[in-house]
Image: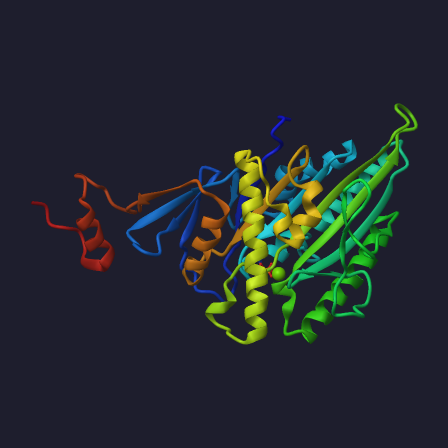
Length: 358
Ligand code: ADP
Ligand code: MG
């Protein structure tokens, strides 16, 4: 660990085509950490984006968990904090990645199983507590309780200048089954609230926080606390393009702002900036102690494979990485005896066939 703090890892995941989608592939994974995407402004070119890791559509939930998430979860048992975000437009695979399904469990069930297994093997007496809440239009709502107010919970600072959400429930869980019952009910609360409020779940951030606390009664006698935050971010699409009601505008600007601030925080941490703009949004303010310093963080950037999402995919990738390069598209199935000029290639792409040799 360096004194300037750990960087936030940025990994990209491309989902498979859905049965209902046209399979016009516009992205491809190269070399495990490069995503190659058709340039929307000039389709004869590709743009290559660099990531810490990059996963194609056939990569399963277990691979992502074992490669990238498992090491983060392990660190909470050393008293550190770790955070995983899923970023992307609606439909890109955030919920699938963080939550998953019965048959393909995602990060949350895998991490919880991992934590309880660790607890069983270890000799310390761990106190495991979970909170689950969402941030919608810069207001915090407890998902472990029935929603009874539209105002949201206040954010406060304690005597040690630690930020906390006042009144947020923290439920003690002693087994995976107990966690799962609580979590399924909370997901139900989220769905109900979402249906009542114009399907807002894709427009709110959902944050699951697991706190693990124990007393080192073998060694130092100190009490330690590790925290894990698993976050399904609001869809990053710009709703202002399609919907222009007053409510939707306020909602969009809140989402855009909080995602923008998150991007700024990640960038500031990753370049080692002296000022990190945590205070500029509710989410980064709440997560302040768990982002940067000794904490480990990872942003999973979810994208769709098809051409229909090409512009969204570019917006997502431009947000997530500053490391990119425009390159010529590879020309497939051709034995190229002589280098083609760019205009030859463009003719070829327009369906005009193999250029004449001069
Ligand atoms: P988001 O939460 O970003 O809006 P979802 O996670 O709901 O997106 O994914 C959209 C659809 O794609 C869902 O039907 C989901 O099951 C499917 N999907 C997403 N990622 C994958 C994947 N890696 N493998 C299989 N299906 C996926
Ligand atoms: Mg979702």
